[in-house]
Image (tube, rainbow, N blue to C red; front, top):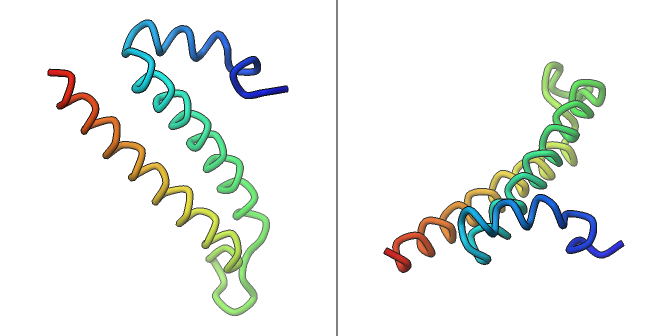
Length: 85
């Protein structure tokens, strides 16, 4: 199912509150946050043998990429907010 159908209610809610570009970015941020939570749960069970207490390297890389993507989206949301003022 295309994301626009699957997330229709959330998109309508955020697009109404924030406008189409920022609303879509807000839904994207929620999706990334959900993915980060799932990866974080997985990291609890996939501990590194080399560094006890730390998740395996691939989990660390996924979390870093999700965190970086979220930071980029936040910067775009701020830029869009400034340009609409």
